[in-house]
Length: 91
Image (cartoon, rainbow, N blue to C red; front, side, top):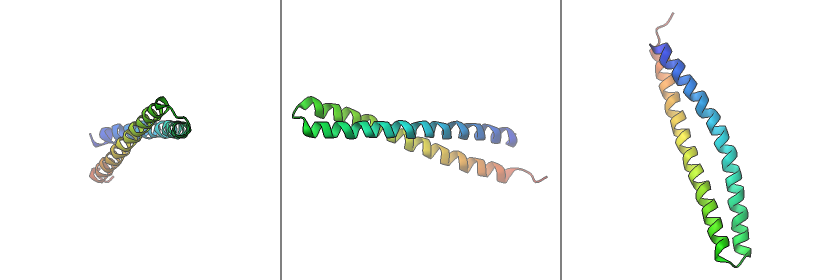
């Protein structure tokens, strides 16, 4: 039973770590886009440019929050994995 839980936890950790790599890549692009739109909003004197920046920044903020959630989940799974390893009988 412990070994099955370890396999499940390990598989979930692999999936989440891959998801984190994708999130980091997407977050970098979203942050770059938001930065570009912020500069454009400062240079342009139109309210539409500011709205574009705010939307882009909201997307970047949402992705950042999702990243933090994934990191917290990974940390919890690593703790669970450690507890399961400690609970395994020695052979």
